[in-house]
Amino acid sequence: MRTLVLGGTGVFGGRLCRLLANDPLIDLTIGARDRARVEALAAELGVAGLVLDWRRDLDRLLASRRFDVLVHVAGPFQGQDYSVAEACIRHGVHYLDLSDDRAFVCGIDRLDAAAKAAGVLVCSGASTAPALTGAVLEQALDEGVAVDRVSFAIVPGNDAPRGRALIEAILAGAGKPIPDQPGRHVWGSLRRFAVPGLGRRWAASCDLPEAALFRQRFGVAETYAGAGLELSVLHFGLGLLAVPVRLGVLRSLKPAAMPLAWIADRLRAFGTDKGGLRIDFEGAGGARTWSLVAEGGDGPFVPATPAAALVRKLARGEVSRRGALPCIGLLSLAEIEAEWVRASLRIASGWGDDGASFRPSLYRRVLGRAYGAMSEAGQRLHDGGGGTWSGRCSVEGPVNLAGRLVARLFALPPAAADAPIEVDFVARGGRETWIRRVGSRTMRSEQYIGSRRPLGSIVERFGPFAFDLAVPVKDGRLELVMAGMRFGGMPLPRFCWPLVKAVETGDEEGRFRFDVEIGLPWISRLARYRGFLTDR
Image (cartoon, rainbow, N blue to C red; front, side, top):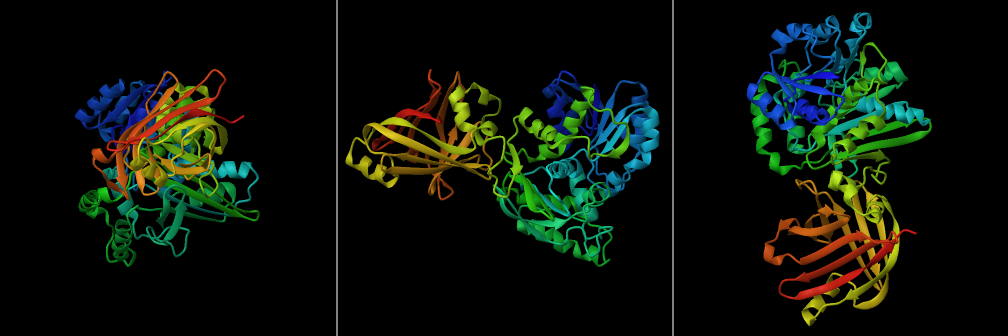
C-alpha cells in the first residue's frame, strides 16, 4: 500500500510514520515542506521522503499515480476546506485525516457520492476523537450497555509537544459557543475527571465531533466532550483568556499562539510526561467507565494509532467500505489497542474506574519487545495483573548490629533455612503493589513507570524511599540494577544508594525463581533471600 503522510514531520504525523515504517505491506513516504526535517526522519526510519507544499503541488503529485492512500496530518483543520480530499477523489486515492474539528469531520459526508463514484474511502477523524472514543462506545453497546449520556476528557501530560497547528487549533475556538449545546462554550463548563494512575484533572468543554455523531448514529442524548491541561495555572489561565472572546470583546485568541506557547514551555518542568483519557457511560442500566493512561511521553502516539490501524487494514484488503464518512464503525477498540502493543508503547487501557483491568501489564509496557526474552514463569508472573504466588525460600540475615537495626526498620525477612513465602500482587491504575510475606515479616512495595523515566526502567517505592531500577533481560534472566534513589521525592547522592543484586529466572519445573541481595555500602549485607514461587 503506497502511503503518503502529508505533514509527516509534525507532532502527530511523525509518530504516525514511526508506527507504519516497519510494516512490509506499507510503502511509506513522508511528505512535508521542511527539507531538513523530511530528510532526517526519512533517513532515520529508512523510508522515502518528499519535500512538497501540498497547497501548490498536491494535484500534480497525485496525478502521477504514485500513491494508493494519503493521510492528511497537516492541520489545523479548523476553517480548512476539503481540497486535499477532493484531490484524492479525482485521482482515485484513499484519503484519511486526523482532524478532530466538529465542522470538518461532520461535514465530510458531502463528498460521499463523489468518493463512491471514484471507488475510494474518504475518512475524517481517524484519531482520538472520534475514532477511539467511538470504538469504545461501540464496544460498550455491543456488550449490552444502555447508553443515554457520554462524558469524556482527554488530559495530556504537560510534557506533550505542542506543535503550532495544535496550539492554533485550541486557541481558535476558545471562548466560542458550541453549536447544538446551549450554554456551552469552548474551554468552559469545567469538570473534574479522575483518571486511574493520574489522579483528578480538570477538563473544559470542547467543540469535538462526538456530540453530533453519537446522537445521529447511536441515539445518545447528551455528550460532554472535554480536554484539559495538566497544570491548573495553564488550564484556568486559558479559561480566563477565553472570557473576552465569550463576551464578544475579542474575535479569537489565535494571534496569541506564539507568546502563549512560550509561556507554556517555560512551565514544562512543573508537569509530567503522563496523560490519559477517561470515558463515562450512563444509561438505564447504570454507569460504566473506560480509561487510558499513557506514560513515558508516549501520549502523543494515541491520536495517531487509529490512522495507523486503518492504513494497515487497507493494506491487508480488509476495508470494503467506500464513500466519505467520519471515522466511526471502521475500527474496533481491539484493533486500535493492538497498535500500542505492536509499537511497545507505554500505554494501558481497560474498563472500570480504578485501573485494575489495565492491559498490557506493567512489565509488558516497561520491557516492550524484551518481554518475550524472560522465562516462561517470569512472563506468567508479570502478566497476571493480580493474584497470589507462593513458595519456599532461604534467607541470610545481616552480618552486624547496624545491619540488624536497618533490616528491622524496613521489615526485611529474618534468617531462615527454609521458610514459606507468599506474594500478593495488586494492580491499580497502571501500578502494582507487591506484598511479600516471609515468616512473620511483611514487606510492601509499589512498582510503577515513574515520570520521565527511560524505556526498560521501573520505579519501586518502599514508603518514602523510591528506587529507580533498570530491568535488562537476556536469555530468560531479568536483573534489577540500581539507577537512582529518592527520599520524599528528593534525589539522594550515589553513596546513599543500597547495594542491590536481584535476578529473576525460571527452572525446569516451570517455577519462578528469585535471588535478591540487599546491602548498604557502610553496613554490608542486610538480607539475601532466594527461592521459588509458583501459581499452582
